[in-house]
Length: 311
Image: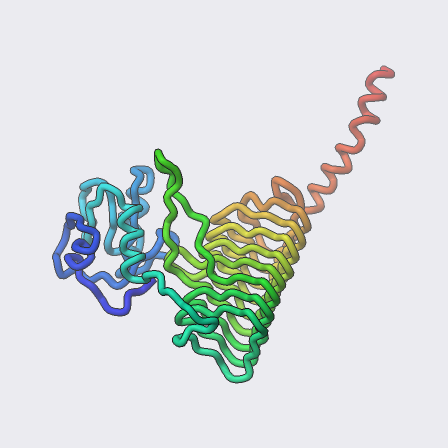
């Protein structure tokens, strides 16, 4: 998430009431999670296991819960609870905005776009030309939709990321300040749910088609001209490259990559990254030919056991 203007390190420290290490005028231009940080961003880290990764990332300001040596050209924000303070910054720079109307005044809707009854279009939403949005679709704030997009009834774009920190008294949610971006010529079926990024974008690439009841987790990037069948659940921070086909009831773990032109057969559990241009099946996932051979051999076990008894 990029700020509207560049802020100083001291200004950011004042918002969260924290100590800082570095020039008080050190520039800060945004905030992001570790996998999408860029120069000028704040990243938070609250576990020693990830200190080095955060300190050596592209982020130039590190919100951290320990005083450590500050890398050259960077700054530190010292906090007793970086998770909490990252949420404070999200609420400050992208606060919740109430809307009492079906289409927010700040929404921009292109020529030729048609919306059926009972749709909700949130604040700062942008919808392109010649889209068709069916009844009861909900589009949360800051969502971006391209031209010639079709969205079927009951779909929700932009709900919060499923991202929590366990506390002694329950689970603390990491507040989502990102967006959903739908590119041109995308088709989205009925009752789909596409969560916004925590600080970045959840993106559906040009020409991709989603069947009914598909879930896409936060910060996932789906490439161009993909086909994703019904009841598929895609976790957060997944990269699906161009022209991937995913059949029904597939589930994925987070943080993996599915290579271009891969085919994932129905009911597969995508437990790891897979190369493109191949067909996969099963849980744990394997190339389909190998998995089908294994299943054929399993069917032979009763026969083999019977012959062993005879011996």
